[in-house]
Image (tube, helix red, strand yellow):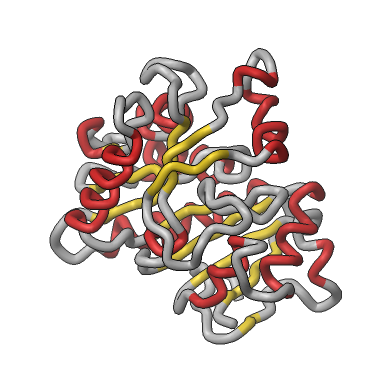
Length: 264
């Protein structure tokens, strides 16, 4: 088991820890662009707010960075406010000095989704490994949109969402029936090529999935548990999300994972 678990007082502190990992990658890049993996959802938002603050206050620059989104809904127009291309622009990249042409996402409008998935997988391979991949976790243990049953070596592909995931995401749409049924997502194998995985989860509704991912059996039933095979994975939690991990959980090392800077 190679996960470093960090429990911090609140979502803002979790966001600062995730921002530390991203800032370290951006400022420590030695030649060539840094590749950032970005997730949408609620849990990463404090990290994105903190990165925007550091850019504006401290001059943290993303001029040489490239960003790659984890996933995208199929069938939403590119300008739909809940397309992940638009969400990440609104919540992060439009507020930084990153080149908009360097922000990449799967093509959820493609006539041939399987071909679009293959193109995105090739783009990721050609770009080289992601330096820091930000991840969230679904209440059923999914990462990206790798639903339960996803193979460990899976690559970017079309996935049909479970009813649970669609219900969880309905809060972002006007009507539950507006949530798309299918998505393009990086696979578990694709995600695993990143140099550093940083999974952030906050709130009590994530506690059962976090406990299953960190302490339960490693397997496709809880896709996030497969991250425990990664050589450098950090899980950043607030106390509510960590509630199922038991006493002595804060800062506990499980295996040989590398901690986020400044939190041990």
